[in-house]
Image 1 (cartoon, rainbow, N blue to C red):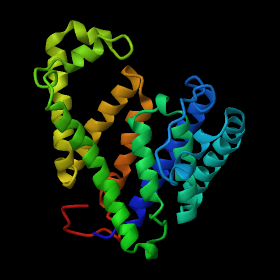
Image 2 (cartoon, one colour; image 1 turned 30 degrees about the vertical axis):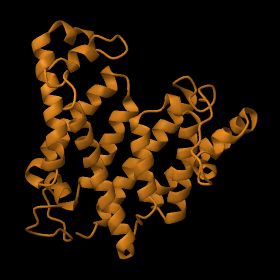
Image 3 (cartoon, one colour; image 1 turned 180 degrees about the vertical axis):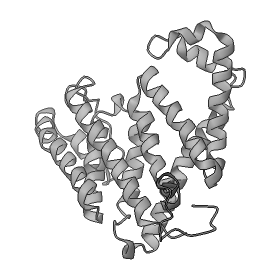
Image 4 (cartoon, rainbow, N blue to C red; image 1 turned 45 degrees about the horizontal axis):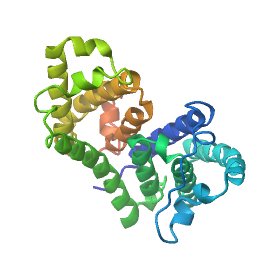
Amino acid sequence: MKPQPWTVRLFQRALMVWVIGFTLSAYWGWDAMYTMGRSPVYAPPGLLKYVTHGLALLPNGIGDVLVLALVPLLVLLCVFVLFRGSSWWVGLLIWIIHLNLMNRAWLAGSGGQQLIANLLFWNIFLPSKEDSFGVAATSAFWIIRLQLLLAYLATGLHKLTGIHWLDGTAVGIAASDPAFGPLWIADHPTLAMVATWCVLLFQLTFPIAVWFRSTRLIWMGIGVVFHLGTAIWMDIPEMGLAFIAAYAIWLDEDTFARFKLKRPSTMEAGSMVG
């Protein structure tokens, strides 16, 4: 299926909102992740490290000065995409800056940052104009869609290799940790067991349910509640909000029309898979 420009613009805007929010909060809050929170230097072998880890390889003083310039530049580029649309060179700059800031403080990172970094890379190939969707853009569109599903499927399958998710104790164990919580769930083992199996079932069925319009919004709604819960109770908002932002790539004009009660002219009638 050819990507719909409406879907691409919605996804790009959701992606930019996440990057703006995370970048500003990581700079001014969360123990100043990009400055005081700098991690030990780590860079992979090869010349590509100077593109993806260049900021981490610089001495502290020079790196701190560059952070002062890169943070506002990244925010301004994202604001530009929000209102004017994206192009390959803007997308490339956003990906490189985000990746370098992330790799400079990799110990304070999470899967949410990694997911966004992946999405930002493929966003380079997504233009904002309808007549620009060639092979590269269409491939990137579907890779982004499948990346979200792969994240859920890999996580769910990995949980099946242990015992705590299968016996229903995983959520209770996590809730008993003061760093996560909520602590009261640990006092209700039956509730914790049901929550454990519901999370596991959701992650394993999402990659299937999202293909069909009849179940897509339901599973996305469950996902929003789930990820907001992890953002609030487990104190990892960047992770939960990253997945919610990625949901936008699975919305289309037909889904939007259901809320507006109006059928858009560009909708492909009779299609089951968006």
